[in-house]
Length: 177
Image (cartoon, rainbow, N blue to C red; front, side, top):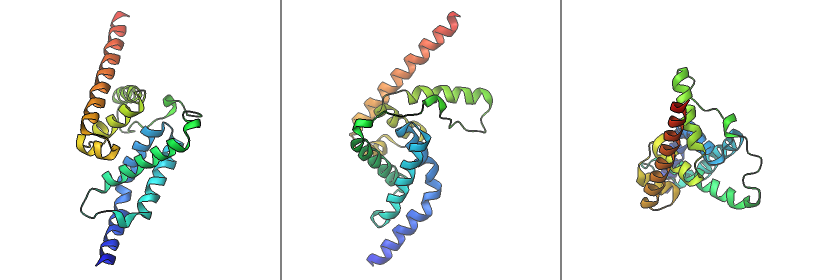
């Protein structure tokens, strides 16, 4: 019976990875700030998921399990590289993940919002991406980040206030020209 469940879990993980990979990569980019490091983190998360596939509970959400793996790998990596944190990052302006099928005006707006989100502090940035981009519930985001639900709500409120203030100020500056 155990072997059968292990095979089911391994099949579920193996078959689910292709659909989840773009989202894991986007989340990895949010965490790392660079495409190269996002590639490494996403690949690491997939490898870890394949290695630990027997631990996946069939019938639960594979995406949530894999986001948790990616987050834990990132935290571990940050701890290992605390001395080098922030060194050698590519400017966010050089990272382009805007949808190619968006029109020029929509792409410009998406890029402006993305740039503002990417400039938020890491804790807010990651929470915003999980909830507003990836569509996770507050409860799911709390589980992925291993933080209390109230912390998710607080981070989102702070991020919304920060982004709202930024865009209000930019709007006033444009109107003044």
